[in-house]
Length: 153
Image (cartoon, rainbow, N blue to C red):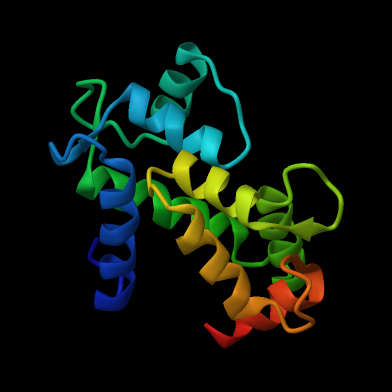
């Protein structure tokens, strides 16, 4: 964690808390599976174990990832994708929310993705998120609105 900025560490801490669903300061196989599924993957337990081993993040080999191990994983992941085009990343992010592939994100899709990320949203909260980004007032977000909203944040 030496090479990480304080801002990056805080960002990783927020992500870590989101996935450490039982608040035990470790991400276990089940929680890691939830992380991967939230990212659109459907890994097996063996694949989760292989990811942790290949990335050399489960340093103490206890089957869980603590915060320092998580920082290494995230740092390595971000190093790998830093060269990616920002637009490519936004397209991928949009696809994660556009579950039915119709080119729009509605409140139900936001609610579904956020729930998979461990963040329970009410219907009203999801609708509010849509309203914040929906510039053409059609109660859904298209790619152009998504990009404008993400760049604004």
